[in-house]
Image 1: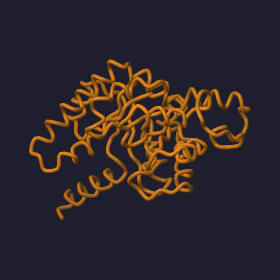
Image 2: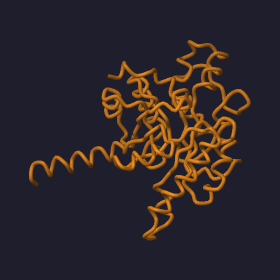
Image 3: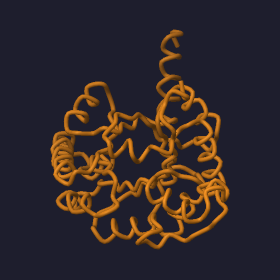
Length: 257
């Protein structure tokens, strides 16, 4: 199935074209799970440095496995620094996802760190990103600038009203609405789900007005219909942790335990 998908390097263009794509978060420090996801037919993975114990060496191996399996590797860095962005991109990531982006200034800095032209990305000639020098320096820089997706997460209440401004920053390729953190911010408010749904509609409308694609994580079939209805085209389905837990729970139930 994997060879029927567009090449992983087309991830950003497919994102901008609002093609329906499916991905998942990957938290386990392994390559085998990623190979399986590629065989199953996912379009991309998000390697989760924010919430998993993934160091630079393991992340590089996971990126290698993704590219070999025709999966676009996106790295959710733990926090924004130029060094963290550079590490992921030189290792061959096709996208950078950054948590808790709540200002235009931070969004602009992320874009600069992710790009050569007009940016501040440090250059190295021999890396997985450059196919070990085969493209040549000028072509390598041009390809990277055209193929790397920059995706800020809107997951703080004080970011909601400026989501449109963040989406309009030149070089921001999509917004990801982090409903988990937004929901948690309401603590035990019984209206949390309703409030987050309204926030999602607001941010989605801001993204649409800015002509910026939207990524979301649907939690059920009905929720999938909701996020699709407000404009999400790139869908993040659960995580490797979630898949293991749900499958193991179902198996135990099936066998009567």
